[in-house]
Length: 638
Image 1 (tube, rainbow, N blue to C red):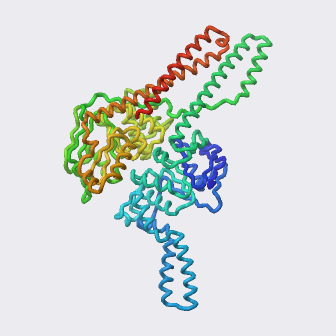
Image 2 (image 1 turned 90 degrees about the vertical axis):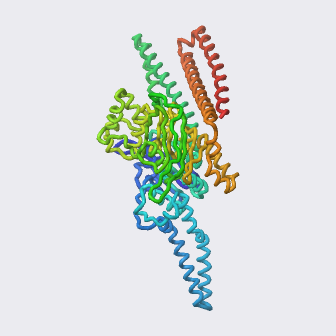
Image 3 (image 1 turned 180 degrees about the vertical axis):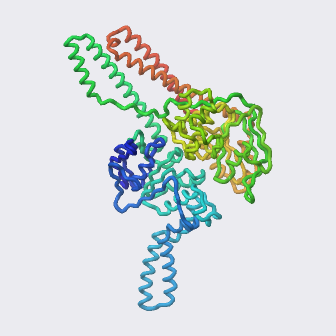
């Protein structure tokens, strides 16, 4: 065991954030802390590294072990270049190398006993240098910088000139090169593109030390984590497995806890009714029996109602009018900024009902394409044609659609005056604005909060073509799932840019990979894209890859009818699966209600009623058996 947290508690202004949180991390273990925004995840990391003090509890790190911490935002203040900043981590190794060179020079000047002594020191120092991996020092720095998305021409940039996101990447690079025994990372993928995230996953999977991560990136957690520590309602619970394993177990536990809670509440109400009835007889014997039951009731340890994983909030997107079959046609699109050419000869066709994700490295021009489509930037060349009756709803990272002087409530109510108070509050709550938050002014919100408000506003629009730029940034997992469900049930067309692979997996029917100024299309979600791309790279020669970049991929050559049939088949399976799951839920609820009814005293002694309920149970069980088989068949027919 390398890290142990025992009974950590922390409150702010009298409100508990963490209560008796306990867990441990083993040597070499990869673990993650999850929970909704505000659950106390970052607070927990700060307590572990000593930046904040716990009110009670202890943090123990194994003797002699080192710890490294990456906070969400880094204010790295240095006049060093990016390369020199990371190389400074290896200062002791660089000093050793300098000393070795000095010794080599000195050997030429001495002889005899002095030379023997120098040779002994030289041997010891070169051995230490080898153990410190000194010969690979500079290549390690270069490898980490390139892995984190820095190009060689950026290595000489001064730290002081970098953006906040770039500084965070530099800080992450420094931390990885320090190579501590346990690394604590708070949202490490926030400022990384897809290739950099994939590189970091591989790096951490092969990392010899332990890793503890706070992240909302579910795909990242699926790849990295072997343990999940969940913070929920100030308490902590540990789950073995990755994020998907945790999600299944959590739902099973939540369902069991909810069933136990409802059953206990039913029993309490039943006992209270019996007590009331006994008291109403107003006889000494009945009153004593009532008092006896009251004492028993007081001894019951009342269960807390479990939190609803998704609550009852469901966002619904409904286009006001249906667009034409052809939604967007782009031909020979080109854009440069000064001497930097982003792309030339970009072609794209999007049909009604498609959900298309544009992916690619930072700086390739993904957001630029969206801005050109929306008329916020002029193209250097090419044509953009919108189809008939196309109405665009645009979400951008600068949030131009917001009014700084309005409150959050006014921002929604003024744009959609037909919504009532409850509907407005539910919409804002889905994007993490609750209570008095709705009366804050937009100008007082952080960048992430403005992003969530813009998204909430867009979700209420009646547009039939949604264009979204990084829509899941700053959302917690619950809000992402609400957005995913809303997009999956949306009958309009969606084009978006995202680095969230889990989100892409759940919502995309087609992927466009922007690389080297060219768009390559893949008909399917992110997992299909990875599988197809890897097989192409594995099987193709360099000449084939060059030819592939110069011609449209096979998926793009599929007829529109073939694409539509595949997408329709996938949508039908998803709809059938949802209907099946809803039917199972309804029948299981009916079974639960029948069991509760049969346990009532007045029913338990009524033979005719019991026979009737038993027959109903049997019928429902037969229906459930058929539905379970149907569900299994649909699950296996992906």
